[in-house]
Figure 1 (cartoon, rainbow, N blue to C red):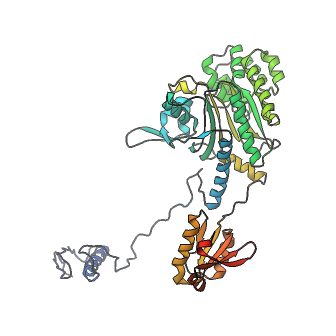
Figure 2: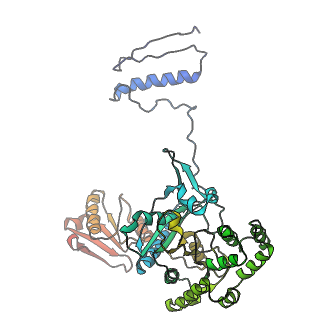
Figure 3: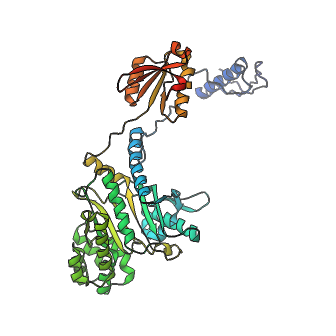
Length: 490
């Protein structure tokens, strides 16, 4: 076929000329296909009442159209969706967090999920960078998703400065992100409940914090036979290192190693401690002290005059006054891995040993000065949402939390949908929850729906009753049914 080099066509149905360029028949069939579609689209524009040049659905269904690629419907590894049933459990748990905090007189705060990267590196050192979800934003600032809440708390306290009076008792429930190896109860994304006291230098603050956690456990059915608290003091380790001439600048590094004592073999612990320059004799003596499980034995080693012994004795005395002495035990190996702790430290643990630490905290008197703030004493704890849910599952203590709606409202005829909406609006204005059936459905379907959402009442809007200004009410638990004026519906 002779090549067609150039053709100009004016379509009378268009408001302006459209120029098409055709090439030889040896060219791609897809080019002809696309050109044909364009002509058909332009021709259809006028007849469809659209503007010239507007885009309409193609008239030809081409086989060569690319199929839409399906996305992975799973959330990123280590993160979670919260479907309605999961949200009910989360809300139940968070409500207990909030209620306990309220009972102890704490005020709620919150912070940005996105913080400057330096906020976390300043506190934990460069080694935490590997665990951060961090990046450079469009303003070329280094930012990170928060791995914990305490640095943000310190930042806010410094920001407020003298405008707030001490002591501060604050709590927060926030989402945190940490890129690390996942185990049971440990995710890369989790929610954390924090309670903190700023401005109290005495052990009474730590004693109250532990009391608040015990109160929470009791509320959800956990007992002292299920969970305990290991308690120690960073000052114990400080005194030991000082005794053996270990430099003060190695303290943070040694704490991180000791914190692994139940996670890796003891030979590995010795090897890591040896790499810091501590002598073999000092390592053996140190590990011997860290195996001590009673205050009396610790006093034999350190003597009774040190701050560590005094603080711990006071804490155990206060535990009796708060009524949770059976929950706590001394364990010298508890040091907590975070470098900012300075005194009393504690961890909640599963007595069966099936789960990692449930919660943990302690005194961090030097954190605010680390960020350039005043030297203000502080202590607090963090409590993750994932481990406690695993424990509740193990103990068969997860609550049954179905959807609950007070009323389900249904129009018996299609033209009464507006009347049913009026009924629903009247009830909602009185603070009652209403599930309004938005389509014409058979009564069998409505009853099934009512059972599924645990509705207390079924309210039917029928023609005869509505003409009288009334509706039919059925109490689903008893089967009682009656008519009531809309103005009297409560």
